[in-house]
Amino acid sequence: MKKITTLVLALTLFAGVSCAKKTETASANIPNETPEMAATESAAATADDKAPYTIRTIDPKLSGKQAWEKILATYKGEVVLIDFWATWCPPCRRAMKEIDAIKPALMKKGARFVYITGETSPMDTWKEMVPNIHGDHYRLTDKQWGELCNQMEIPGIPAYILINKDGSTAFSNLSTGGYPGNEIIGNNIEVALTK
Image (tube, rainbow, N blue to C red; front, side, top):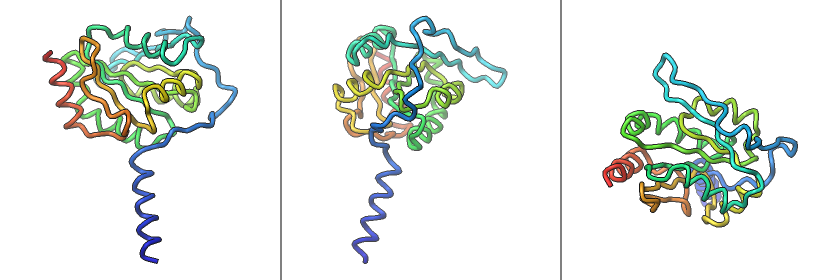
């Protein structure tokens, strides 16, 4: 009995720390946005001093690798933290709330925040959530998301990669996932901004 209780507790803790890749599409009839809609939806800073958000799109005909290259090219010469997440992932949402404590100061210093999800995040839910997650948002096709996760060996979300101004990787936990905490993320961004 003690072994079963320990096993159940361990599994519960693991499930609360990271979301495994969701393979089923939440809704098969939710289309990806068209290229014409790229960066057309954004919000300006509001009276409560929130930073803006931007919805960006990637051509759905591109492969996962090509989509990744296109995203990286957009931020050439900048320090960018890329967050792989989904609307249905509680640890992803908790991490986003936690990072809000350090994000405004880092954004003022020039850091960019990019959020990538796939079609398992229902379009309506995603569009409802992104105004409260300040940064640039991409919603990839299932094919792009799957190829990218396989290529980058992402077993679950949330997962993060920090890109230096020169395009090199400053920090990555793509292969392990989970939010590493504000101290680790903040320190790595601060170092990257000085390079």
